[in-house]
Image (cartoon, rainbow, N blue to C red; front, side, top):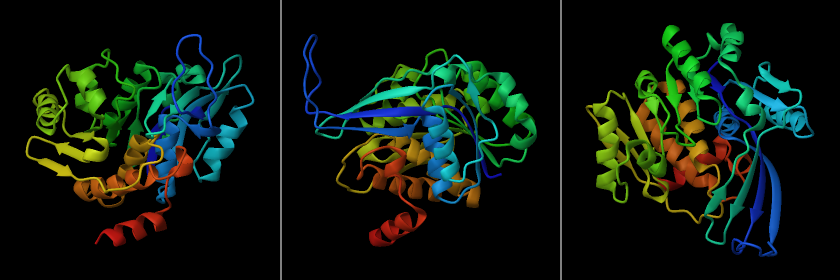
Length: 306
C-alpha cells in the first residue's frame, strides 16, 4: 500500500450562484451539481488518479448517499475495506456556493465522519502497517487524528497533517510529531494568530511553527503559489497562470498529488512543483474530484510549461 488516508468523505451539494441571498431573500441560481467530496476522499482520489495504491479509513451514513460514496472510491481503485456504514447516522454533506469569480463558500455537516474513532485506526492496523505514508485532515475527531499520528510514529510511517478546517484546539505536540504540516493561508492565520496578508508575513508565521518544533510547513497560497519552510529551507514555488472556473478542492488536489510524488521518489521540492501544477489544472474545471486531471493530462501540462 502506498498511501493510507484516514479521514472524511462528504457529498458535495454545489450551487453556482450570481450572488448570496440576503436574510429573507430568495434568489435564482444558474446551476447545481452533486458530487463526491470531503477532504479525505478528495485527497485519496487525487493520489489514486496519479497512480498510487490508496486505502481509506472512513465512515458513511446509512442513507442514499452511502453506496454512491463507496462505489465512487472503488471506481478510482481505492481500497474501501475499512470504509464502513453507521446505522442511524447521515453521511457527511457539504453545501458549497461558488460565485461568478470562482470563489467558494462551504458549510460542512460531518455526519458519520464524527463517528470515526481511534479504535477504527487500530481495527485497520494490519493493513495500515503496509502504508508508506499516512494522510490526515481535521474533518474527523481530533482524538482519531492523534491516534493516527501516534500509529505513524510507532511504525515509522511518515504523516501528512492538513489542518483543515483549522481548529485552535489542535494539540501542537501532535503537529510536531507529523512530518508535513500543510495549511493554507487562512488556516495558518487561525493557528498562529499572526497576519498573513503578504508573503513575508506568511513566511514569518510558518517560521514561527518551525521554531515550535514542526518539521516541515508547506503553505498553499492559491494564485501566489506554495511556500515550503524548514529549519534549513525557505522555498517558494510559483503557481501557473490559469483561468480559474472553480477553486473548490484545489488544496486537496495539491495534498493528494504531493503525497503521490513524495512516496514515489522522496523529493519534496519536486513533489511540490508537480502538485502545484496539478492543483492549478484542477481549478480550470467545475467540481472537486471531477476536476482533477489524469497523470497524462498533468504531464502534458508540465511539458507545455517548459
